[in-house]
Length: 576
Image: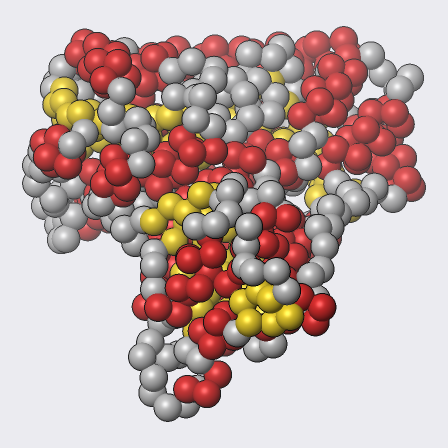
């Protein structure tokens, strides 16, 4: 029971509101300014998981949201605790992930006195979040927490921020004066029927239509509607971001991720399509800011956020609303406007392109070389995983290589930073995933550079007895940066990019986990088997080729040029 009958202090109010929202986990590092909340959590059913860095705490909260679809919650203390959290906040904002950050700040009577850890946090965070609120009246705390949860998951999902001064958190208020607020479940909006009719006509007239399913499909839980739509219409489907796995790669209508550098049909599908239906995804770098699509292609945008309808490549038609409801409307409108079989010739084109592309990539994927080719490492990991496993991805080249081979069998099977390109997410995401889905095996593939950002979250995993398995793609360098430097300035001009060899597996062993080094491709899968059987937090340190250049490195080398060259998206003419 939280608090004595009749009165609650501010920290107890926060926890009661979170309990009413069915929050299961809160991620934090303790601090004096949030002590009342931390103490109140002890008397609740909410798990408090203390991390080794606030950045990791926010990333863990983000992973909860990515896996469950509900807002994750991070609790940070004032000043440096707050600033440490900002990278995680920015990553969630760029990815459109619902997140609630609760921060402590200096007491109200200390503002302007140069008190410990004092700063104007609200002004700093406002441009980064959907909504921000400072609560100075204790009786308003529960209502503010409920509003924060509603704002995070309403419309376009994203992070929100609530700060509460330390003295307000400690203030006790009689329950009769408290504004408790309530849990609000947003009602998803439908798209305009006239726009739906026009979109149906546009799709029916197309000879080479495709649909790209993004994060909006996952957060609207529209997997069944997506499957019903493609089966009824025959449209080839590509997936992106959290949309990956919303239609399994094995489905006859799914051609895998829309990433154009991935071996398969994505590049040809995006370039050749005469009608692209973007469902819950955005026209971003991943589509060359719209230049990837044919100039005369019709673009249909299905998105809950109207601002996305004219980003980079303005849509010919915008269906503003919930992805699931809009897909259902569109499927109904397309009845009688052409059988799925009409797209048979287009599907054959895509099949042929996928076959040729995969054949060209096979030598790298199956390479027997040592040091190990990164594509071979990723293939071994992908083939070891089951459809129920979760994989987190972290690192520049590491994420690129993994995305080139990853099989997406179910939603939320892969977690990665996304457009923010944030390093350090892999281990925090993995720890959080194991908490959110304890029945599933959780793996992380992490570059040796990015592993350094939140390495001590191995300690967090070990303390909480979370047997995640981390595979290190160890090329002894900031690989993507090093390769892009070589492409720009010359093979020997790579300042600040060499790391040298680090025995990460031994460091994890010293912390109490399982560690193993791998130097030969044939030893990768046996090492994964042993790590999984150990029942411990594990680190498999794989020594990989330093000099193979990924298409991601080619694209990075083009940064600063006025336009990203199309050859960067095509692997630099076969460089990958």
